[in-house]
Length: 87
Image: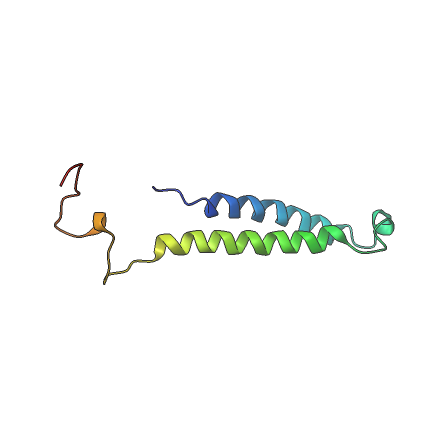
C-alpha cells in the first residue's frame, strides 16, 4: 500500500489549523471574543490543530523515509522475485 492515512490527515489539520491560527492572530483584541471571556479561541485551537497536523504529517513521512537494511520487507529484498500465490 502506498498511501499512509497520516499524510492527508496531517495536511488537512495543518491547513485548517493554519487558517484558524492566522485568523486568531489578525483578530486579537476584537469584540468577538467577549462571549468567550476574552479568550482568543481561534488562536489557541488553531495552534493545537496545527501542531497535531504537523505531528501526523511528520510521522507519516517518517514511515516512508525509514529503511531497515537489516530486516528489509520481503518485497524490498534485492535480487528476489516477489512470491505469488502458493508455496
